[in-house]
Image 1 (cartoon, each protein chain N blue to C red):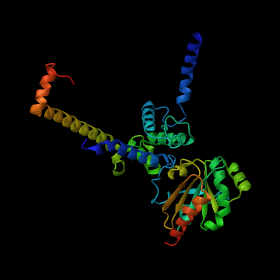
Image 2: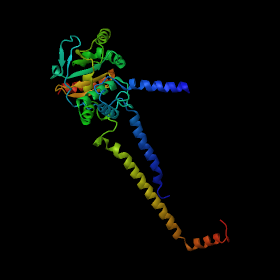
Image 3: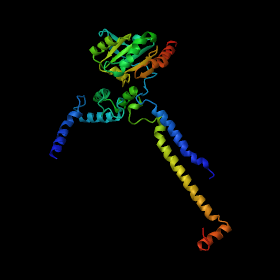
Image 4: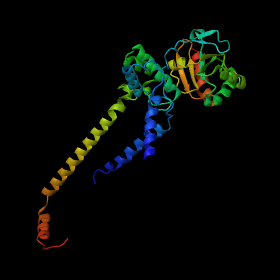
Length: 156
Length: 178
């Protein structure tokens, strides 16, 4: 137990070393926070399932430095995002923009859901209708047989 | 059952999915289309590898079709690509500009000494800033630039003989004739 506590505490102690790089925003917590938020939105193209905030790839290090320079220079989020998409394409964004080429991506799930709901409604309606109709349309002979069955005068 | 065709719907859905998966699984997720295709090559002023006090800019290649090949001595796939460039440099017939990307100068020089130098000239991008303007994310990458200075094609990953003959040389011929 004690061993684990020591391990945990030492881990906490090294955390700051891990989080900080010498960057132009390091003395300004507001700018630092903005830079990290931006970095979390940008995908590292080398290890594609990590953002540049998380990745240790050299490209991610370079891009982080670039983002921090821009933040320190006072560029807006839009300008920084534009800089990245101009060079690396929309793929660099975790959340792709709505465009003609991404309509399927954005609308696909909703369209599928609507299709599913519509076909479910259709099926339910059809079956309930046909069940109603078959109840009403017993012929005289069927009626007599049903009565016989119910009263136990006949067997199936 | 009046509507037997309803039973075919699951099969159809499966077939459509299968086609999507077949296309999707055969694509290389590392090949990300470059937004720079059809745009002018980003401007640069970088030192010449052979005589670093000389500056090379994109204007030096105005009116020519040329290849910009991003390489580095630390890049593993470049070892695969390099012999192809050395062997076919003459046949390619247009200037091949090497971009020594985020490399140590001495390592780069040793590499060219050991493996041959297919480049018309190389330029030095030690901090990778020009590479960032080009959207380089994996070395080697090669850009084909037309006479007007527009990027027409980007090869991601090493140039093999196959890529060279099926894609790059035909594209060069097409651009040369324009």
